[in-house]
Length: 224
Image (tube, rainbow, N blue to C red; front, side, top):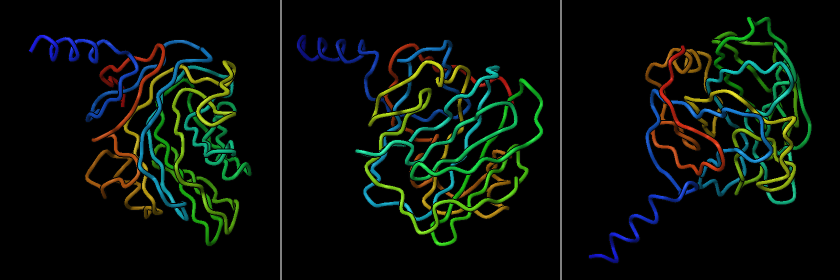
């Protein structure tokens, strides 16, 4: 029994221990700029993606560019990346190619972002605070690779690393969901409103697997 208690104590003390929990009503807080602090999101994605929808909430007062969602596979960076270049300017990268969408926004203020893409048409969409931005064409016919490293807080230049402080995120991220399909406009509205919607197939904030590394804290979300 003493040995069992010892191992429980050791595991509980590890700051980078694998976690699986519902994070409803909470956010990851990235309190500082760094080249180390991040969260790795764990998913068993074993087949390439032909379609996806990604939604999340973020709150930051950074005016410089930063990574919001970084998805790399072995040997390829920027396989799937959501990056905010400046106030009101968001980019989606697929296979290193990118499209950029612009929106009028109040700074600083919380934002709800959904982005989706389908391989067959190459159509990429951004929805910001429930409003659709202009559709763009990107990497038609491409397949987003499987077995990814998915990182919040940093932009990967290698598989799970190569971080740059000047591209790091400082602020709060929550309500992150990802599907292997394109959600309909009505479904995206439900996600934005926080109402019932289809179960996320790739990443689910209500049952998230993740590893926190460095100075990252989980706190209640106090903004809408």
